[in-house]
Image (cartoon, rainbow, N blue to C red; front, side, top):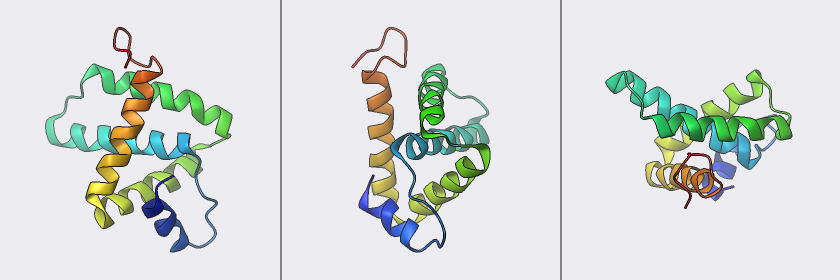
Length: 107
């Protein structure tokens, strides 16, 4: 987890630090939401990456309410540190692709 996200969590009372799957799923969801609002279309690989991280949420025992909290943290992080947020999102996408999330595109 990046230091910037930990900083954001420190400023948010009563929030258990998210696990990697929650952070990455939130990063991808926010990315998809942004692209949808701008263009109305999202490239197919984004959905594969989202689904790959969503499967990891089960292991993290993350529910819809918790996922909404983490998405809010990720949005705040993007405002506070756009470059750090972009790097975190890229790392999440790369990790999923390297693990085989996108058919035919293994790192």
